[in-house]
Length: 140
Image (cartoon, rainbow, N blue to C red; front, side, top):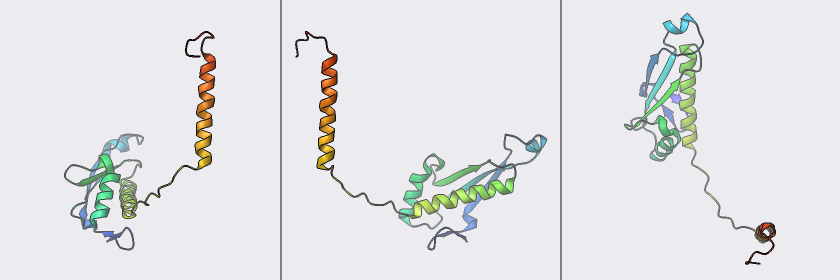
């Protein structure tokens, strides 16, 4: 089991790996080895709590396929091993972020001073624009 938080762990069997050739630096080596990694994680079958699953879908965005599969591409490094580690670390980071519920927003009201400053700025701006008008303008 791969620990995510103290209460959430994922089974390595729920992760599917696919490898392909990556572009970028590496000379002939890049043409011979499949160093790019694609991690596929079935969110619905992983046994995650429903609230965590919902937040994970929102965090994943375009990386979430229609069938509920989270797809992470890793091709930052030249070795397949490091790309696998990178993809797994990104999955765990996303799961940790989804495990923490967002803080509830506290309703606040603007202070009396901020209201006065806002209205004074509006008055100043209005006067500035009024002074830019031609002298004989009919609205004056």
